[in-house]
Amino acid sequence: MPGQLGEGDDLGDEAGEVIRCPTHQAVPPPEPDSAVADAALFLALQLLRAPSLPGFGQFCDLWAITPDGKQLFRLTNLPNIADNGVLMPHFSPDGYYLSWGQMKTPANIFDPTQREAAGYWTLRVARFDEIGGRPQLTQEKIYEPAPDTFYENDGFTPDGTHLIFTGNPDKQSVWQSQVYLVDLASGAISSRLTSGSYNEHAVYTPDGTQILWMSNAGNGNNGPTDWWIMNADGSNPKRLTYFNQFGSGQYRGKVWATDASFSPDGRSFAGYIQTNLITQRGYIVKVQLK
Image (tube, rainbow, N blue to C red; front, side, top):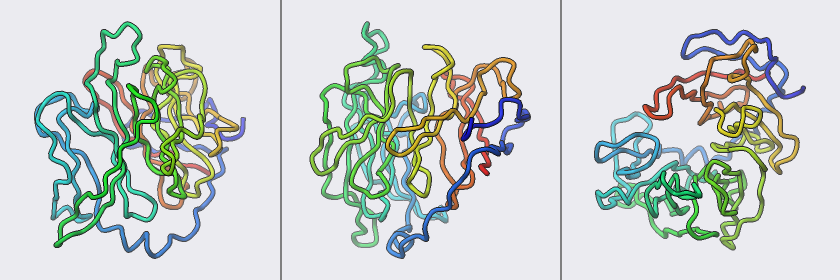
C-alpha cells in the first residue's frame, strides 16, 4: 500500500534509531517567508510548577525560552491547584500568535461515560508580543465550540485560519477522540477529519498537504497506537507503522506512537514512542521518509 512502511522492514531495538519508510513520498515545503524566519526568536514550552504525573497538563504553566537556552520567560501564572494546567503550545505560521489547551476541570477516570476521563478543556489563542524586552501574551481568546469537552490543541493550520485539535465534541468517550478543525473567525468546528477508533496528536507535513497522526485503528478498540497519514482534507488515510502487529518485522510489543515533529524539509520526522502510559516512559525515534 503506498504511503506505509513495509510490514517486514527491520526497525531494530535501540532508542534514537532511524526508521526508514521507503514507499512514502516526502514533498519538500516552499521556502519560508522572511517574516516567519525573523519571528523565530523564542520557543514555547510548558513547565511543571508542582510534582505531578507528566503528560496530563496539571500544575503546568506556559513559558518562552530563547533557542540558546539562556533566557526563560514565564507567560502564564495559573493558581497552583489541580484544577489548572496547560498543554500543547504551538506558534502560528507567522510566529506572532500562540495557541494552547487550558484545563477547565481535571480528569475524572470514574466518569461512567468516559467523556471526562481526560478532563474538560478549552482552546486558547493569544498574541505573542515582546514588550520591554520580555515576551508576553496579549489579546487572549477562548475557543470552546462545544461545552464540556476534551480539547487537545495540535496547532494552527498552515494558513493560520484554523486550529487543528483532537477531542470529543460529539459527546463521545475520550477514547473515541477524533481530529477536527475549528475556524478561528467564527469559533465553530468546520471539519471532522477522522472517524472511528481513537485518534490524537495530529501534525501537518511542512508542505501543508498531509497530516500525520496516531490511531489505534487496526489494533483493537482498547489497543495501543501506530502512526497514520492522510491528506489535509481527511481523505486517503494510510497506516505508516506496524509496531503493534505481532509477526511484523516492526513489532515491538505493546507501545503507543504519540507526538511527532517533522524536519524542515519534510523528509523525516522525530516521534515519541511510549512504553508505559502510567509512568510515561518511552523513547524517541527518527522516521526517514523517501
